[in-house]
Amino acid sequence: MTGESPLLSLALSVEYGGGKRVLENLNLQVAAGEIMGLVGQSGSGKSTLALAILRLLHLKGGRATGKIEFGGRDLARLREREMRGLRGRQIGLVLQSPLSSLNPVLRVGTQLTEAWKAHANGGLPCRQAVGEALLAVALSGTDEFLTRFPGQLSVGQAQRVLIAMAILHRPRLLIADEPTSALDVITQAEVLALFAKLNRELGVALLFISHDLPSVASLCHRIAILHEGQIVECAPTEEIFCRPVHPYTRQLIAAQPRARKPE
Image (cartoon, rainbow, N blue to C red):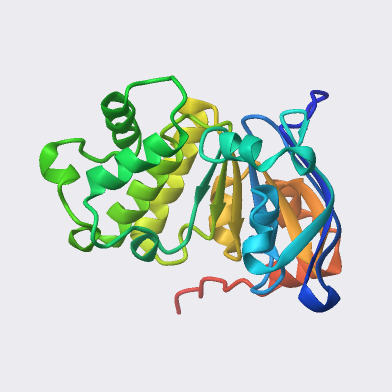
């Protein structure tokens, strides 16, 4: 982190119905143009944090208290109309199940157009924005591709379409929630390289949420470790792997499979 104010600053707690606390006094900052990895085991609250940032927790019966600042604005104080102006335009979301996230009965071009219309407020014309977004994720903007249905795409292509949707309006922050968990190893590597390219060429910051430490290590500038609802350690990637401080971080790293030496 530099001396500049962070793009995203969190200090919050989250509870669901019945008073169940999922996140407790969680503190995290993401700088502009940074790739921050958020690592934790299943059920640790990683996806809950993504919903809290987007102010969508109510859809799951959750409630956040505390501070969520983005670009110097307190998101907790914004009206829903103002939040709709941020979602999709300044904060993009990439989910983990591409084929189930796309509408199976709508063509790819139709879904990209609808995603553009949902957040359009000036900027590039729809066709140009769609073409540039597809080009950025190494997909074709031809009519042949745009008229396909999701079922005619590979899982990797479908994930790239979701990423294209998320960057249509050149957001300042992308939240990627387990975006490689449904992909094979080769496609995972391609998608990770794509995120690095988007960060480098568009300057978009990325909150990369995953339980997969090797993926996080290959992509992220810093890593935050989430355990029992709190960030227990946050440091540059090299420090996390070479000089972990918290016992849980050391446990995570020790649990990673190691390549066997040839006999």
